[in-house]
Amino acid sequence: MDKKIISTGAIFGMLAIILGAFGAHALKKVLSIEELSTFETGVKYQMYHALFLVFIGTINELSQKAKKTIYYLVVFGVIFFSGSIYLLATNNLTSFDFKVIGFITPVGGLLLILAWGVLFVNFLKKKS
Image (tube, rainbow, N blue to C red; front, side, top):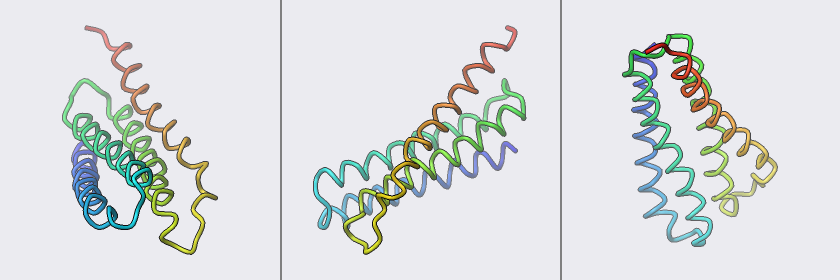
């Protein structure tokens, strides 16, 4: 499981760098400052959680069950939170109105919060 967690973190990190560069160069010409800032928020949270996954995959203090729970919360959290932000920020570039999926963003945020909560609770329960 640790290999899967670290690999996913690495992929999320690489994609965050690619999307960040894409936003800074290609999208800078077609998005407003506000839309670009929104896009960058998605990139930041994706990168934070890529690093979080790498951290989770490298520590031995968590059970495999806790790691698996955190893994799935982060993966779906990033897809829902950052993914929906990318689509909403670039909404005016397509004919589809991505505002209909706007409710997914806070769901993704909640999943990310829960992932951190699982880490917190597991460390509170751990005996020194």
